[in-house]
Length: 233
Image 1 (spheres, one colour):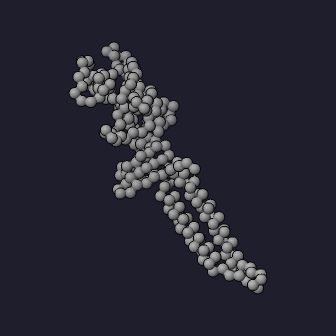
Image 2 (cartoon, helix red, strand yellow):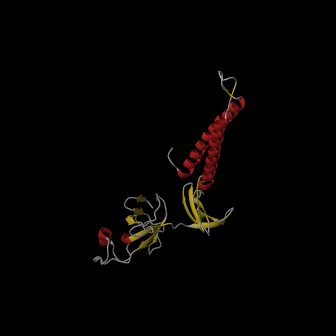
Image 3 (cartoon, helix red, strand yellow):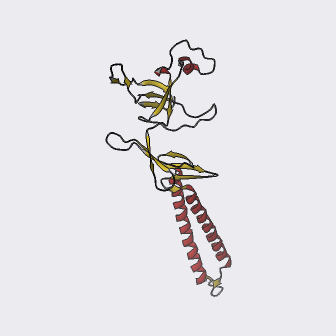
């Protein structure tokens, strides 16, 4: 792929395989402009993802000309051009790459895209044969059976949420303890000089420290959730 227009879902495509002439010489195909990119979808729903320069796609050439259809769509299109299977009428389908399959640690396997001439891999993606995965950069959304998971750069959403709920429970318990301490506190000394008892002062100081810890915990929880969900502060 030479260029991609995400708004129009059109791409300029450079075919990877050269054309062989009758004399045995190989020549490059020309760049095919304004190629429609096919994503799974219907009138109301579409599954799409980002594409960029050098992504590989499968090009399928239509049997009939598509000029009129591209302009208007619909059914019963009358196309006067007699051309057949022309490069001008191809559609690009993302997702086709040359791959090698190698074993990977843990569950699943690794799809390794062919190496570039300099030896660097184009990319490597870990896949599972019993799980649906949606991967974009460091974010991974997975579905297996009736459960789903979401990670971002090794931060697991449900682990973070579990910690958040535990911290909320602890904070609620600390609030109850403080309320009980306030309710039960007593004064000491003569009526003219009432002071909070030393025991209650100790309890209130512990309550204060607990509240500080709660605030720190919630700050960490918010940070972790932001890392997982890429949420704004």
